[in-house]
Image (tube, rainbow, N blue to C red):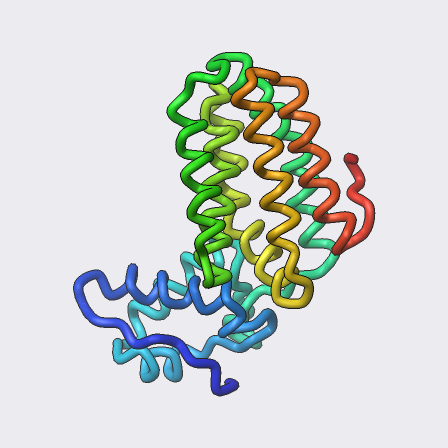
Length: 221
């Protein structure tokens, strides 16, 4: 295992604290894609027993941030074209439609839009890539949360960690969050104007442009 620095954690909920620390390290590149995650070493670094580390790794595997192998153990998931297209194809199919429905249902007067604006303000102030990634996904979630379809929301929620991993890897090699922030503002402006179709079109273009710039043309664009 490399000399990646993972912050030590203390009780109360050790598993939750370990989970948060590991997720932060993954999303900031402190634990890069392909990095082995050895329970004993992580437990020693973080000052806990192996049990919370093991449970946190299982949770991260379920979220798509870690891969588990009976031969190689746990590793940080590698981001490649297949993963990026798998995640973003689903987002392109569902997220613009969810936003269109949310705007059509709520118009410009929705608490979700205030949450989206707050997330953009937080993202502008972030100096940490993981915090920016979290603000970014809070923005996107606020856009689709009011779509009126719980199954659609659940599917999109299930992609958030993997989306954050892809973004973290991309931003590490080619910082592009300023361009994306400008696109976010344009999407929110359309939302606040009550233009469901324009907001959905801008969101589709935003997602498709990100994946095309970094991984090649999206199959559903």
